[in-house]
Amino acid sequence: MLQLKNISKSYDGVTILKNINLEIEKGEIVSILGPSGSGKTTLLNLILGLVDVDEGNIIYNGKDLTNVPMEERGFNIVFQDYALFPHLNAYKNITYGLKNKPDISTKEEVDDLIRLLGLEEHLNKKIDQLSGGQKQRVALARTMVMKPKILLLDEPLSALDGVIKESIKDRIKTIAKEYHLTTIIVTHDPEEALTLSDRVLIINEGTISQYGKPEEIINAPANNFVQEFILRQLEIKKNNIFSLFRKEQNNNIIWQVG
Ligand SMILES: Nc1ncnc2c1ncn2[C@@H]1O[C@H](COP(=O)(O)OP(=O)(O)OP(=O)(O)O)[C@@H](O)[C@H]1O
Image (cartoon, rainbow, N blue to C red; front, top):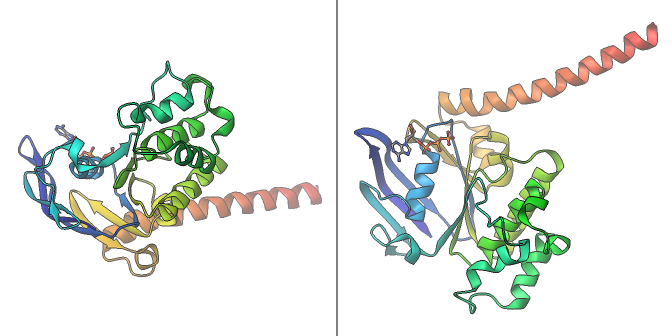
């Protein structure tokens, strides 16, 4: 279990995160959801160890990691831009980290992951020959072969759309459940957070607005911010789709009458 206790962080005297308290169970998928500048990536970086906390503690399975350097925490991140090596093919990207630590994953485990992510046909391709969704899956595989204790994903779906987005969402869910892998995802998209996660952490201006299961957030928004910002966005999206549908129907009627 990961626990954040009274975490605070400021930059240049400006408070970015204030008194964050949070518990994430092993194998849970948690999304950090909030508007631009609310402190989502800062929170992810604090967990990863890329950024130091000003106050508070990060505890993992009872051990205080607050002052443990990033490399020793055993967490791993997939960045928004994937950060793949362009001169290496997909397979070499996936197995790159194993060069120095070959015992972490067996060949069978690597092959399993490649199969799970549907990358078999793309292994010999260079990175610039891959689509956005394929790059994303290579980045996920490269991180997963290192068997992180916690998988951190920064806006993993933002560059993707439609069917590909849904398919990567499913793959993230499958991997998290199959490997009992605690997964923390930063997103600004309420629909993505609510459909992908076991629990959603909604932050606004550096504080927690609500932390709960998707159905709790939808059925019992804790405050005005959750209601107005998060649920309203979903409502607008839904209405846009319905109005498009109605327009289409009206056009058909006019066309038929005409
Ligand atoms: N290294 C830094 N130095 C100074 N200010 C920073 C630094 N990193 C982040 N900030 C500030 O902290 C605030 C929160 O940034 P953060 O990147 O965590 O937000 P976010 O919720 O992830 O936003 P977005 O959705 O736009 O990526 C912003 O106002 C940002 O300008």
